[in-house]
Length: 350
Image (cartoon, rainbow, N blue to C red):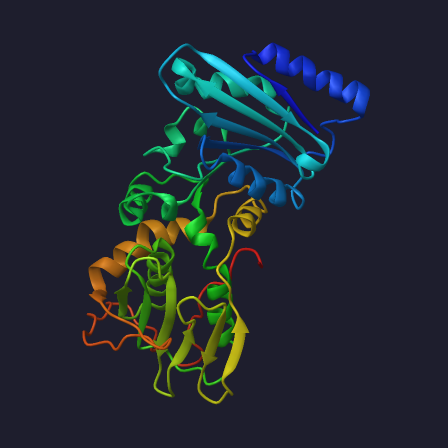
């Protein structure tokens, strides 16, 4: 059920919520958090649908702050969605116009669930410092998406510069399955140390950048970041060992990857690109700071840029581009006897 409240105010929306609870049985009990979406008018419906799907795993009140035209008079157009139109919670769509666009925090406060965590999500271009944003200051977790910005690499740099505990990015969630497969490969013999690695992916892929930074941080070996055409995403990860390389290759446009490692038959694994719904649901599973992401963002990327190599490459037939440049070795290596330190397992299974 969708109830439209055009040209309204916060008090009228709150009264309508109370009426729904009294007459229809829609209650706030069982909601585990408040999810605030800060977005623009065009893509808002798609992002609300992704949040509705995620709410079936994490029942919550969804508040969509939809920013309209800043010109004209201040106006609030609201929608209340419950039942089948609201996933496993309830949805408030607050469309702001005129000067009110810059005061979304004031409009949101009356609708926050009492004694429940708050998560803020910017599906498009986020503020430079989410933790200093008025809505970001309310939230325990602040979710951005560097891939949705006009310059993903610059967005990733800003995230690293201004990162505070509680910040995270969907670009990190998109590599959870890749990280899990690579970590599992190191649980099987031979236990040779990794001597070098290559991550091949689009030149606009923040996920490929984070993957290379994670491997550089955890393995402490030379790492090469090969950039392919924009929009190709992650194509392959190759980790060199004396016994032979570990290769995880997903041809561009495919949802099936090939995992090759010494002493094991070649395996084909399902590895489709993750949807925003899946990534958002994963981020809502934990409301404490993600320490691994913080280390990769602030230390791993710096290690990659200082000690690693970045080059342009072109792929074909699903094969990783050949490496022609050797990265400088890191002062710390994993040449001690026994199994090498395997990459940290993902925080939550996907």
